[in-house]
Length: 71
Figure 1 (cartoon, rainbow, N blue to C red):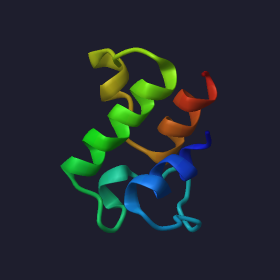
Figure 2 (figure 1 turned 135 degrees about the horizontal axis):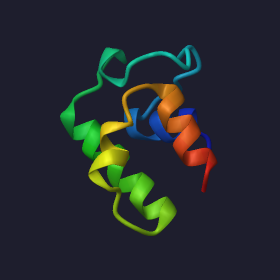
Figure 3 (figure 1 turned 60 degrees about the vertical axis):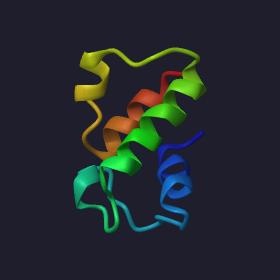
Figure 4 (figure 1 turned 90 degrees about the vertical axis):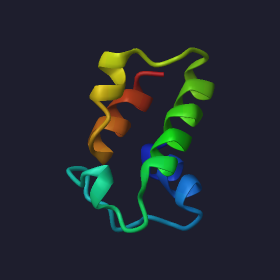
């Protein structure tokens, strides 16, 4: 699954205009509950819990793209 599709599914609308360097917190409508949803979806995708280091590394769309690409 692509990062933009993952984020779009959490927001409930397409996010076609996101630049890879966009910080998650700057996405319109993004909040802590959406971040939790993102983490849960990624954990379901990879079949394990994220480490603290991995969580700290998920700050931008590009971070998510790179992380999801590995799985």
